[in-house]
Image 1 (cartoon, rainbow, N blue to C red):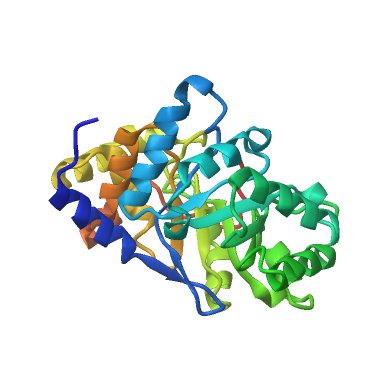
Image 2 (cartoon, rainbow, N blue to C red):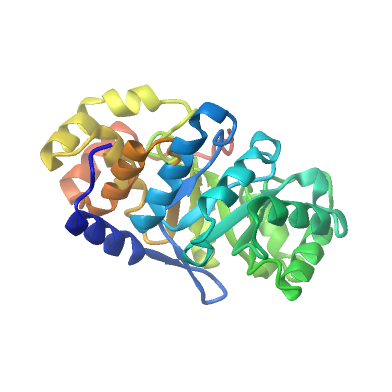
Length: 299
């Protein structure tokens, strides 16, 4: 890719580093991070993917999200290689399979993730989605991992409002720090009730697929007259407008995936875009939030 000059690099690093989301335990989490779904699965792309992740860290997108599910551990191996020597700069997140989330099995699952990532701790560990294992067991396992210093904190993923209510009704359920869900301009179902409820309980959202990667409406989003007009107005790419829209809310973090440095650079630049009221009204009119409850979108 075109070399980034030192001034631009420093400016983007500051912009992204200053964007933080407050968690219930009082700690701070980077607002703009990097997703890794499908990364690590193609050996021919490995070096480019590593370069993309390392560039993202340099540009202030220090949260890296992965999961034991991604490529059956290949993504975690890739991330471990990418953060070698810079682990102290990274806010590291991984996720456990639901069927491995029992009190004892989650300890083994976390240990395996740590080995693949070549680190001694995770900053955040998530239950990937709700399965048949009782949440009480998962919570107990998460709390034990915290006590042992294997994880800094824990959260969940793909939980709808009834799941979150159930979770917080349990002992230590209020230790949940975040809920990672599908959320982007074309998938706004969480705004009807889940986002409001989580705000009432000070639990932020982590948006996966904020660029509609693999999700519905991606083409409609990028090619819409409104998004194209706003992108032209700001002198940026349409894809950057979609990400800028997602992170305009201070309690919503986003983890766009990138497999190459050029895309990573575009993602990093989105933090500097300042959408105004006119922009937001146009986008709301074209891609409105739902007026009724809808099923939680999941990829």
